[in-house]
Image (cartoon, rainbow, N blue to C red; front, side, top):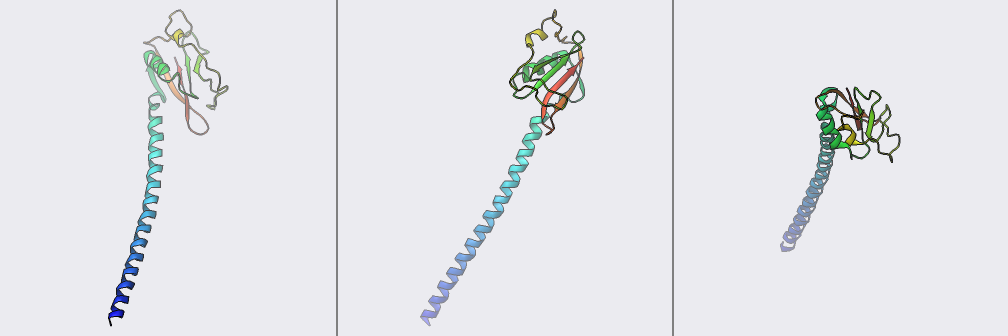
Length: 152
């Protein structure tokens, strides 16, 4: 009788241990899935936030001082170009990388434009701080923002 009671206790202990291990494994797997979902959501939010900085330039009219501020802010951004066409310089000038119409960088190793000329009133590249510019963003085929165009 005593042996049967001990055997039942051992069997119950083994059963409870297996049940506990099973519960832990199930919780671990569901936690992994939740973590993957959270990482994907965080990545999406991060992408949206990084592109949100450029929405102010998407089809809006801004002042020349905002153009020069954007130029200073993004001049050293990797794989990025800023195009400015003024009343004096209708052909325009690229600063940073030169982009084609599809947003592709023509020569990633070259950097264009001299920002100091945008402050010099004698230069054709001069950006009048009170001038009005039509802004638009340039995206590549992957829908990544590669540049901004400012046309007076």
